[in-house]
Amino acid sequence: MPDESNNLTETLLAAAHLVVPDAIPGLIDRHAKGLGADSAVLYLVDLDQCALVPLSGPGGALLQEVGIDRTLPGRCYRSLEVVDTLDETGNRTVWVPVVDGTERLGVLQLLFSGGAQGDREEMRGFSGLVAQLVMTKGSYGDFFELARRRKDVTVAAELLWQLLPPLTFGTEDLAIAACFVPTGDLGGDAFDYGVGARRAQVAVFDAMGHGLDAGLLATTAVAGYRNSRRKGFGLPEMAEYVGDAIRCHFEDSRFVTGILISLDIATGRMSWCVAGHPPPLLLRQGRVVKHLDLGVGLPFGVGPASEVFTEQLEPGDRVLLYTDGVTEARDASGDLFGTDQLVNLVSRTAGDDPPPETMRRLMHAIEDHNDGPMRDDATVVMIEWQGVASARLKV
Image (cartoon, rainbow, N blue to C red):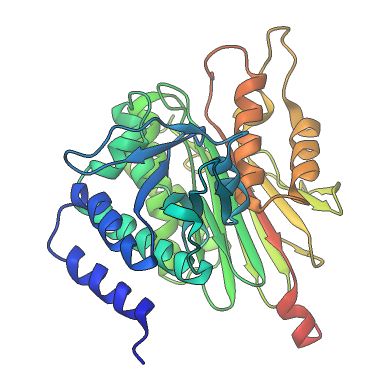
């Protein structure tokens, strides 16, 4: 007997080969019939992660965006769980998370008349294919990107959004989740990571200044970091390489602060160096057990970063990297957001929420605390080491 779910996947993929991104919502709606659904609507999360924005193909109905907090589709997005409801007429609405790997893209609304029930595994498989289509087709046009923008984006922000990696990455042993709150004219924050079979490497940067100049500085720092990482350099050589890239292309007064981290995924042995940046925080069982401030060197482009230090993580440990825009956000009375509030919020939500939801809540807490527009970019990257491989290897 043929596998209908595989056939549905094959037909949707074949139909998507020669279409523009704008046609994807219509394809999704038509092929959702293979799940038994009457219709399907894709909702993508906006860049601020406040709302889910419905997409429709040419001639499709105009639908309203929905908030992420205190709504059923929002619950699906926040929890990454299928949400199934029946209305008073007996019709069923199923919300399915749309996730690329561990990166949350939005939700898929499936409508079933007469209370019909689709197969949840088939629906999840279908939504997974939808996520792949969004990621691949999004490179060929602006349809998906424009839908996610609820406000104007500057040239500097345009540059940086294209530079950043996905906000979330996860394996059995490791989770990396980030939140990024840019100012209107961009404050020069950036982050990057690269994960292999044995090692995870993470960096956070904060370029001096604002606007396009800061964006170009941050871009150079990330490019230098990626290039050195791909050359197989160790942390000291990476730090020197990033500094040389900045010195070669900018005048003497320009610099970037940052942190470079290397984590052995199997053992939990973490190494780091700091270049004129707030040091990382080590959280264990919801408390800060260490400020990893053994040494802070000069910013990239000015002088050598700190020497490399090491720390043995325990299963469940979290390491927080952040820029000063987080702790220096001020409310109307002038009170700083501070590291205590940063740690409290991460600790309070991390036990119940997936890492990306913890970061989303943190992002909005920073914005809510700040009085008026953000004065500086605010970036947080959380590294969570589960130690599963460590337990298997008995290290």
